[in-house]
Image (cartoon, rainbow, N blue to C red; front, side, top):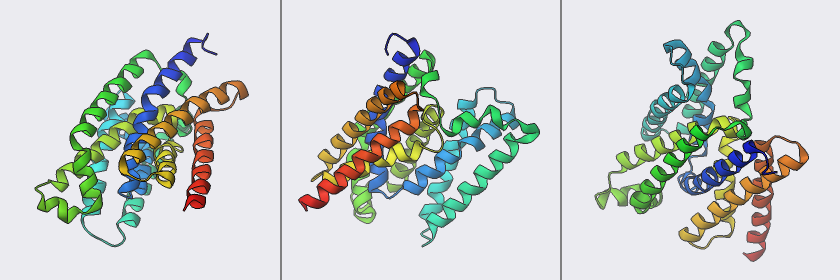
Amino acid sequence: MFSYEFMRRAMIAILIISPLFGMVGTMIVQKKMAYFSDALGHSALTGIAVGVICGIGNTTISMMIFAVCFALLLNYISRKGLSSSDTLISVFASCATALGLAILSRGGNFSNYSALLVGDVLSISWVEIFELIGLFFLILVFWWISINRLTAISIHPTLAKSRSISVRVMEDAFAVLVALLVMLSVRWVGILLINALLILPAASSRNISTNFREYTYFSMIFSLFSGVVGLTVSYFTDMATGPMIVIVASVIYFATYIYGKDRA
């Protein structure tokens, strides 16, 4: 299958992006931010709509700008300490998504953007692969510098503050990083599937891990395995790549759930 240029590009993209999903997903699951990342994914359409209104030709730039602002807004809402913050964030996300759909559907033009719902990694270009490589190194550097602080915050924010860790700055920085990852990946993964690829490998890893190092390593391995196998199976079965990757990741989750339950 690698005799085709588009398959080689797709495999390279998956080898770059899958470990990032696994790595970042561990902290999303640890901090119970599944609703947060899902809201970000669905806000992609709104980012495009804002770009259309403002005359921004590059939809990726408009999505990233909107997603960063939206992520910081969601963090602000979460910090208010309301017992229903997840509900409030869902309301904001729903409103933003509906607004984006309404704007993009004017004149029956939504068909131009419907491919974003399921994504198409086979259409990725070399320029976009280089963008993913840049993001890959950015996240690696951030992870190397901040992982201990993020872990402390996820376990006990008050204790982290007492250790002179700026909880607000770290949470906002992580939210911005998730926003950039989601927006650069959503075109290839799909709005409907992006959250599953962030959550499933980490959730699978959590079923069998005994410490945080194993948690991170297994999550990256499961994510990478799901991406490679999903792309290969989709090629030979002539099915969409994004859904097939999620199916493989789901099988891994149920297998680790059963294994972890039996071992316990």
